Length: 283
Image (tube, rainbow, N blue to C red; front, side, top):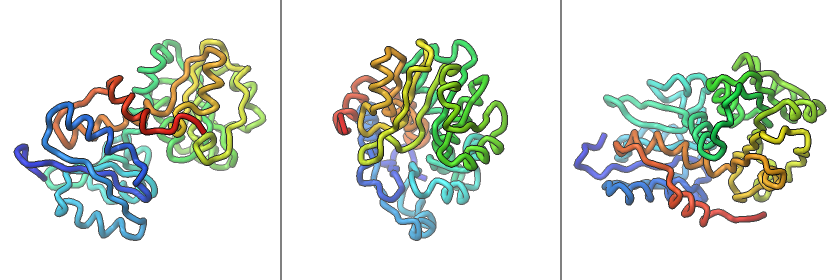
């Protein structure tokens, strides 16, 4: 592990990673805080991941972020993980402690930080949330809401069996529900979260009417390409509290930077503007 006087470096490991905004985020912070360091892209295919990780420390990395398709494989390689990573069985942040590879999953904390920043007070009363999807992102977000004390969390997924399995794994107050129940569930919800790829640039649209949502509800879409998905536009049209995906993208990066470079960075308006400028504004 580099000493304080060395140039520290970190990276984003995934396939593909050429479109990752993580380097922009971390390079901004390195410059802002005057830290001698770098943040690189490491495009690593699934079959090459074990070999890459065998030489990770020797390559001079103080740690790194992990994205698809390696989050579960990275979790299995860690000798020590945070409670959150262990609960989610996936890692997106790596670092070394006493020569040991350690891992965390910062998606849950990043999601909550984005909600707190963009929709302050969303949890003033015990939230009732509808979460669309049942993949890795849904797991992190349902767990985050569970930690925050949500009263009820309904998982709605195209394949009901996946939602059932996730709800059973994470436990109450998380439960699965059918698509047909959405109007009724939305009428009771204080928060709606889309964790699917629907609405992402190049993906099918998310067809969902927001009329049943109460007027004080918050709507979050973790998709950030485009900057404003149809779901976020529809939420704004109804004057609901809208939380676009860029917030989670920025906030989930904070813990890793602190681990590698020793400074806890801030998510500033300037940083947000820089990342927004790099993302297509519309489909």
